[in-house]
Length: 323
Image (tube, rainbow, N blue to C red; front, top):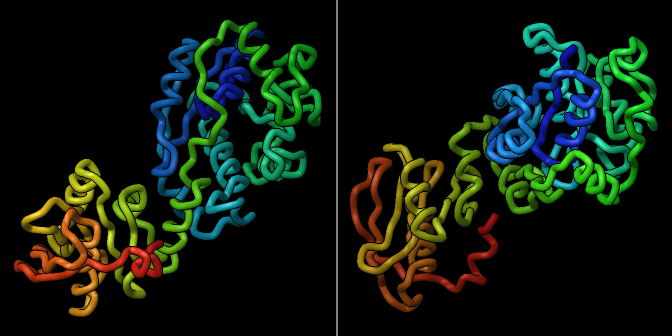
């Protein structure tokens, strides 16, 4: 007997896997990767308990869902119900090829009031299309019986009935399974981050087509919307400057201060001459030059190859452009 675990790499999914393995059932962890949540922590968690793991890239289907999630967003741009349903549906579609019979998750009833209540868990299961094959070992005794329990594949009496937001029961269970290393319960999804979500929402309004490069740029620098279809990404340090430059294309306009340290500024869109002036001024504003100093700014790419002089501006006045 084998189960597939929708695995986040957090303590709950580690414990769910161990509860099922304790019943002599093989478990394969599945981590579903997108630009918004990456696999290193999940790999580390799986390795720490000798749990085999497979990383599955669901970027294309996830981006398609993200633009218009059926059940809407959470507090920010996080479509938790639709996202969880997508992951479980993908796991369900992998059951046959992996030689597995059912799916487990580490969800705990009531741990997250909006996405882990009975209604939300039922909705996720229903939307996934694999409702009877989803087992949540940590809260199973508080949920309707599932096919793996009905068939006797899993002993329901050895499952648990956790609920609520307290982490104490999980920590006690971790001791029982000799799990000593696990990440904090803080979410690893960028879609729950306020600043990232604001930038993503702005991007969707300006361009409904989500490209991977634009998503990667959302993770970097300061962002300024200087026109309906024109945006600046301003590096905050040398590492970001390098990454922003590496993500630029020949058709992109890139600005830098010439004689003083400053940011790499990537212009996305088709700027007017007035927007170029504003971009040069913002470049100086975040450089080591004083705002009253005329400073050389290079403009390269996008058909440009030149230098112009610009002064910085009071950053309080620039806040109206900041995303």
